[in-house]
Every structure is written in C-alpha cells, then in structure tokens.
Amino acid sequence: MIAALVVPLVGRVSARLAHGITVVAPAVALVCAVMALRVALDSGPWHYYLGGWAPPWGIEYVVDPLGGGMAVLVALLATLVAIYAGPHLRALSPRRAAVFNSLFLLLTSGLLGITLTGDLFNLYVFVEISSLAAYALLASGGERAIVATFRYLLIGTIAASFYLLGIGYLYALTGTVNMADLAMRLPQAGGGSAMTVGVVLIVVGLAIKMAVFPLHGWMPDAYTYAPPPVTMFIAAVMSKVSAYALLRVLFFVLPRTGAVETALSVLSWVAAGGVLAGSVLALAQTDVRRMLAYSSVGQMGYVVLGLSIGNAAALTGALLHIMGHAVAKASLFGAVASLPRDTVQADIAGFAGASRRAPLTMAAFTLAALSLVGMPPTAGFFSKWYLLQGAIEADAWLFAAVLLVSSLLSAVYFFRVIEQIYFAPDPAAAEPDRSRCHPEVSLRLLGPVITLSAAVLLIGLFNGWFVTTVIRHALPEL
Amino acid sequence: MFGNLYPDPNDGTRMNLIAWGQLQYALSAVLLLVGLYGMLVQTNFVRKLMAMNVMQVGVIVLFVSLAVRTGGTPPIEIEHQAAQTDVVYANPLPHALMLTAIVVSVSTTGVALALLIRIHRRFDTVDEAELLDRLRE
Image (cartoon, rainbow over all chains, first blue to last red):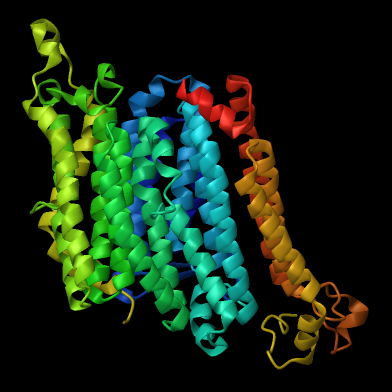
C-alpha cells in the first residue's frame, strides 16, 4: 500500500510517449490517493520514509486527511484534463505532443508531491518542479504566451527564493526542516525576530504563488494566452495547492503566537481587498478568459480570508471552496476553450447565442458560473455559507459584508456572459444550415467539462458528507 | 555523526559562529538586495535574469554559513579521526539542501534562457519596454 502511493509518483515522470499513459497515470494515482485517504481517515496519518531514513534526517511523506484530500482533488482534475487534452494534442506534431505529455505528468507529480510531503525543503523542491513544468507548458501557447511566461518565471522564482530564505531562518532557529519536528521545536525556540522574518518570507513567497491580490500581476496574461488544457489545469489546481501549502505551514507547522497571528490578520485584510479588487477587475474585462482569471484572484481571496479568520467554520469554508472552485474553474475554462474556432477571440460578444450552437457545453458553463456566484445548491453556495458563518462567529462583520458584496459583483460579471449565451440572437442564425449542422464539440472535450460541472453540483448536494467525513478530520486542532 | 545536527543554543561553538560569522550574513543580505534591486530596475530581460541569479546566490550563502562550525572539518568519517571523540564536523545538511537548490536554480535559468531565445527570435529584442510596445501593435 505504501509503495502503491509512491511508485506512481516516480513512475509517472518517466512516462513519456503515449497519450494513453498520460490519462492512465493520473487515474492510477487517483485510485491510490483515494485508497490512501481512506486509510488515513480510518487509522490516522500514514508516514512513509523515503530511502528508509527516519525523520528528521530523511525525507518524510505523510498522508493525513488534509494532504490526502488535496491529492485526490489534484489527481481527479489531472485525469479529466488529460482526457480533455486529447483533441488538442492531435493538432500538434508527435514530438511536441510527447513533450506536452511528459511536462503534464511532471506538473501533476510535482503538485501531488506538494500535497504529500512532510518536509519543508522537499516542499520547495516540489514547488519548483511543478513551476518549471508549468512555465514550459504555459510558454507553448504562442508568442504572447512566451513573454507572459518569462515574467511569470521571474516573479515565481522570487517567490520561491523568499520561501527558501524563510525556511533558512526557521532552520537556523531549530536545526530541522521536517514539518512535524519543526512544530515541536518552534515553540521552544521562542518568537524572536528571526522567527518573524522567517514567517513573513514564507507567507509572502506562497502568497505570490497563489496570486493573492496584490501579488497577482503575473496571472491574467499567463492564463489568457496559454493553450486550453494547460490553463484549465493550472488555473484550477496550482493556486489551490499553494493555498494548501500556506494552510499547512501556518496551522500545522508554526506555533500560533505573535508573528503568526499578525501574519494572519494582515492576510485577512489583503484577502478582503483581493476579493473586491478581483471582482471589480473581472467586471472590467471583455475577454472571457481574462475575466475568469481575475475572478480567480477574487475567489482565491475567499480561500485566504477563510484561512485568516481561522476558526473551524471559516476553515471548513476555505477547504470546501478550494474543492468547489478548482472543479468549477476547470469546467469554465474547459467550456470556453472547447467552443468552435470561430469564437476563439472569446470576448463576451462572441458568446452571443452560443446556447443554440453548443447547448451542453453552455449548460456546464452556466452551472459552474452559478457555483462561483454562490447559488444554492451548488458547491459555491455552501462554501460561502461556511465562510460567512466563520466571519460572523469571529465578529468580523466587515469581512462578512465583503463576502456578500463580492458575490453580488460576481453575479453581475457572470450574468453578462450568461445573458449573451441564452438571450442574444445568434449571428450564425442568418445562415440556418450552418448553425444547425454545427457539430457541438467532440465527446472527449465535452465529457470532462460535463463531469466537472456535475461534480460542482454533487459537491454542493453532498457537502454535508464531505464536511463530516473528510474536512472535519483535516482541520488543525484549534 | 549526527550529534551536531541540532546545535545547542548555549554551545560555545555557536556563540563563536555568531560573533565571527557576521560578515557572511551581511554578504548574503547584500547579494539578496542587489539581486532584488536589479530585478526591479533593469528593463533588459537578460539583466533581470542575472539579477535573479545573484539573488539566489544570496540565499545559498545564507544556508552555507549556517553550516559553519569554528574549527569544523568536512563531515567525512576518516579512520584516524574515528578514534578521537572531540572532532567537530561542519553541519552537512545545509550543504545537501543547497546542492538541490543550486540544481533548481540552474534548471530555472535554463528554462528562462530558452524562453529568452524564443522571444529574441520572434521580436528581435529582449528589452521589456520595447517588447511591450511591439505586443501592443
């Protein structure tokens, strides 16, 4: 069982040529992750020592409900996106398709590694593995994408260096980089200025990776110009995994004393600003992909707000929102990118009458959009409900107001698109033959998109089950 | 050989390290700030990349200075030393970590250079301001 988890992690990197492997490997990892999560839920966290060295000397992998749950989410999305990427790959030359496959697997394994590692330095290595793969994938989207990627690379590397420097300070204090060990030793080391510097550096580093406002500058360009399956996966998963890393470090590694409390309260204001700014900026966009990217800035603000409020309800909301938003964003980007080529500009006007040309895709888009707006019974409603409950419990009325206002704003920007989809006349309707015979989109594009938006609905309907069986066990002791 | 892994805060050797090692920490801070400043101010992408590398070296210097013990020898077990009990080894762990970090930084630089070559081929410039002008066209 232990090997079952780690073997795919290693094996998937060497997986190369066939697209089949790209689909099967995440699927296998998904099965393994689900099994590992069940073990972790039944019998407590599960430790694996790489190379047989016990911590604190060796590198440790830990499957606890939180990390295991994230691993399941990552593997699920990787599988669906791999299926979705099929038609996209056929358009490429075999050599480039092979490169795409191996980079995609590298990215997936890096992200899985982040969720499972029990070692801060190992986390840094996995962050860099996934980032490098992401840079290469993003850059394959054409000339504009290359420039956007280069700027992302510079900023991402600053972020990683900050994080590494932060680890350096914690290491100087305690002499260990193992998470469990650090959690034990840090309270004794006391909260001196070295600790403050370390905390600040780690938080800023991870916040850049998450594209938390005002550190989001790199994101919209990178998302807009990248090839569709890449955007779908990276937008859905990468920032979520960084959010997970932040949660892990703040609540499981660092003691909740001076520096961390201050970091949390600063984060909460930043997040509230991000929620509003993301929504307002999204409102100002005409390109739907840019709009979705800015909406991600806002939605990540929700997650950070949940983390920084930091009581049980708010954390539950943050985790549920990580799940719901990952699935919904993947569905949205997937739906936008799978539309027929003549709407490739993807500005809002281009969606006029799209419901008649691609009814199922657009239904999926609408469902996922409703979830981000927070309509019951989708996932977004329940995660916002928990967040709101957390804010009210913490007497943070201002944040509760921010949550409500930005829901309203996201309703406005999504309904602009939805209105075009369903009520605007179809420009192609003038030539009845063309609009009627237009094939919707191939099943391999449609399948994952529909599955994802169904998942949005399912997470919403069965949110009680998710909260009691997984999320409640994943919460840190408060 | 792992005896030194957790330095005792009251240990004399560590006190020495702090008094004696100020210079390295200052060097690390200077490198970091020079790097960051360069990344902010330069408009040429190649120079930005070089500044990035300077910054990463700053981080590496910090870690490596953490490993130093006054009078420490390289952490290798040698037969004639094995009999002695008072040998002070330098801490090997930061070195191992930094080897990995150097590998990471090299591969990042590689990817960045590859991107730069493609940018240069397409736009004939690696200057940020000029690039933004051309992208707007």
